[in-house]
Image 1 (cartoon, rainbow, N blue to C red):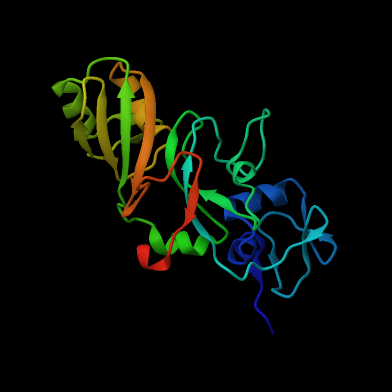
Image 2: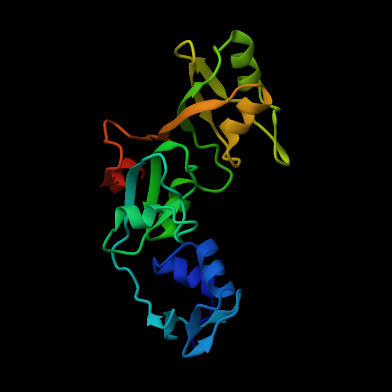
Length: 228
């Protein structure tokens, strides 16, 4: 007899959406199994007929992993809010895909997009201090004191404290920062705490994956040998 599996894991495993997005779908009453409404957290049999908004979901055979140069103004969501353009709408990819991690609306740069969360779990195993690199422009001259305070860690961001990180001044108003954590709007909040406002923010690297000349708004498939 087949073992039951939680609906959010099932939808993630077959490449339909992330577990978090699956929870949102079930909470909204949009998922059924064999014609019955599926509550959040429910376990189903793998051979059940699963529908979203009445349409049967199909397993995605090919695992897709894209490197996308997100433009400023595009939001990292699979559902449109307040007439904003989402990543999935912008890419209009033939297979259902979703962004991994976040890059706020006012920022641009490297974003990973996939149809299977297991790929990302292999790349970014929980607890690993994987690096993310950003180029930032602020509204005031970057001082040695600012660089030292940003890099030493301990800045309060929401209910956490920042880890020590690498910060390098690269211009009068510009700096490079390499983080190993991903708190909500972290760089902007760190700068605000020190009396600065971010003017531009661009993510240029996640681990060994870089934009490498990819034009803003463009994307490419990531090959397995790039991250295995």
